[in-house]
Length: 105
Image 1 (cartoon, one colour):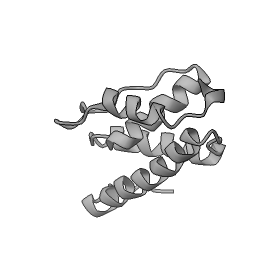
Image 2: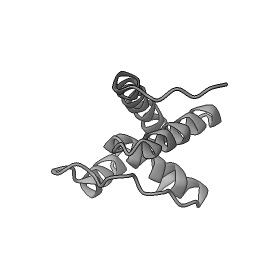
Image 3: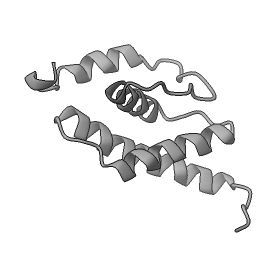
């Protein structure tokens, strides 16, 4: 299997799909469900691919990766670049914490 260099169009599609899957995973975490293992692995692989190509992770992916790592007691590698200007990840965390069920608190 020969690896082709990733074109900007393909990386853009990876970003789009990564955001969609991150949204589903975060929804599962907020509602007290579990993220299927194959989805968590797909997110981790996408994060690694983006990191290998020097691309910034979508903020939602960063948040989900940290949530999954916290749940499993693992650490998450930092994205290639910091969060976009104007993105308050701590504020998002506080906002979404309000949706957690009493069982999770």
